[in-house]
Length: 173
Image 1 (cartoon, one colour):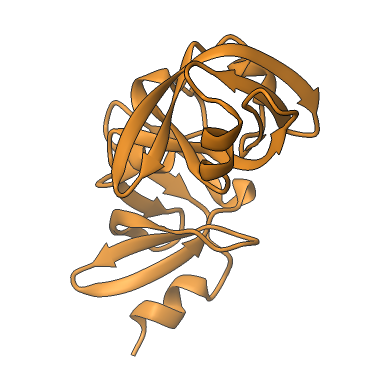
Image 2: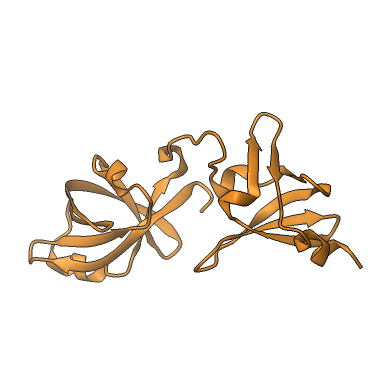
């Protein structure tokens, strides 16, 4: 699972020749117009499907025709999740980051200094939350652009400016 990232989901069939409509869960769906294949998650396996046709419709939706998928097979794929290998992700620079790339980075607050290492993220519907391990105590920081000052990939560090009192909630006794 760590070798793939979530791209979207098959939402419905389109026509009778096996075409499907997908929802692309990305800020830049047009970057995926030239895909040659996708991986469909079935029973904890990632099965590759060759894309014969990709028509981007806007609003993060596209119509796909997958090789060897007819109308009946398309119906069976409804609600299936689509994935791509992590190697397909374009590298990010500056303060933009993928969650998987900063796990293990030292998190340094402008006031409190080092508060621990990034242990992971909690995906919330409105706001993802960064989990930081501070010697066995968990510190939770909302992933808000204004809180993240610098992502130092070379030194594996994240500089943040947490709102006053947020870190103290977790660390002060």
